[in-house]
Length: 318
Ligand SMILES: Nc1ncnc2c1ncn2[C@@H]1O[C@H](COP(=O)(O)OP(=O)(O)O)[C@@H](O)[C@H]1O
Ligand SMILES: [Mg+2]
Image 1 (cartoon, helix red, strand yellow):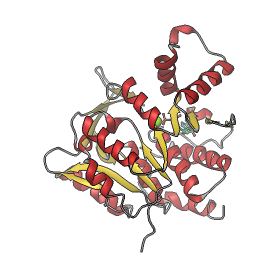
Image 2 (spheres, rainbow, N blue to C red):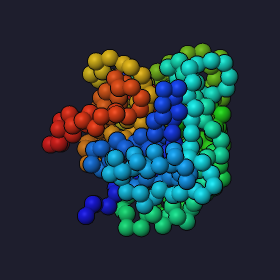
Image 3 (spheres, rainbow, N blue to C red):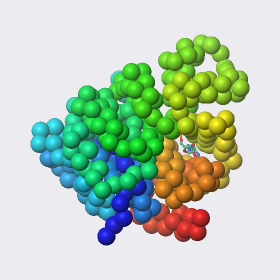
């Protein structure tokens, strides 16, 4: 019998529609797949539609041998979709020369609170992962609140702000709920702007000023840890005990194809380190190294499962 899942992943599973074809994604789902590939399959709470894209998501659950206990089926709403086009004019979040249009009112906006809580039966999770996109609608916000109320596990928030989807109000409620938060530099700027009115016109902050503002954020939201990822420059972890762990000299990936999913890879290995009981410093170093390696594959997750073998082998003994 499979062991009980030690992590809960809450949020969107969706289909990214590229001009060349479709790929199942969504930040929470990417994290879930990485954990499953490392033999730490999580309980993944999401909602899909009764449609072809829903079948594609389900097929990924099967391919990664993930239990579908938390996978809800919506009889009306469609499976989440993000339309990815070559960058042009118009609204939407841009990355690597592409424009992402996140469609409104999708099945993942209607995660049922009762079914979500019911799916927790028999689990003893150490952590709950959540983000902000799946909180843009009331129903899924209620489901997240219900899940959080039902467990005392550590709350891990990967903010993942998506332009036009969730703003200050959702960030605030998420930060209030969280114990450990991961943001990238751009998201950190938004938080500084919202909570301390420090904006782009205030000039370049010194390193000490940035650190002081990070500490102030942690105090304001009673955080146990704050992780700021810095793209190719690595990451910094602030601990509530005043500690600061920087990972700045990670082995560079052999080449970078795209940085899509780098943050998800980082979060997945951070959570894996907690499941495996790795020391925090080692966990952070591994999270950076693995996230860097994901930059050398196309898209957010490797197509080929063999990708994981090297890492599983390297990390087996400690
Ligand atoms: N160009 C890069 N080269 C090497 N590692 C990278 C690169 N971009 C991202 N990473 C790794 O991925 C992590 C997360 O990337 P980042 O861009 O900061 O977050 P997000 O994907 O959430 O925007 C970084 O801390 C780093 O470990
Ligand atoms: Mg991110």
